[in-house]
Length: 117
Image (cartoon, rainbow, N blue to C red; front, side):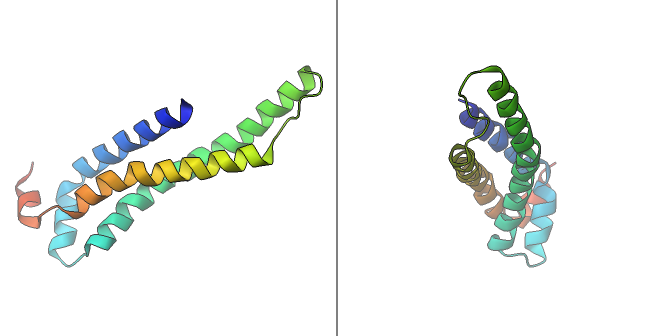
């Protein structure tokens, strides 16, 4: 459930960012940016947000596991396999959630983008 909510949230934020930066993206395409450059720009912004979330979330998850293990009998405080799997799944979902707005941004026509307010 948390992964689904995170993916939907990341998609929403990325799509909103692309919508707000339509003119900038149009200007970049007009002066020679390739579609790959635009996709890379949008995906790097999405993965920057994921990285920030992981930098905050992983230590908090380890702290929460330590707190739970100190309160419950024979419960491990951390599971590296589960934590690694969660990171990989989050990265995969972030790729899909960021790729949809990135492809939309890459297909922006410069003339149309400059007319958009």
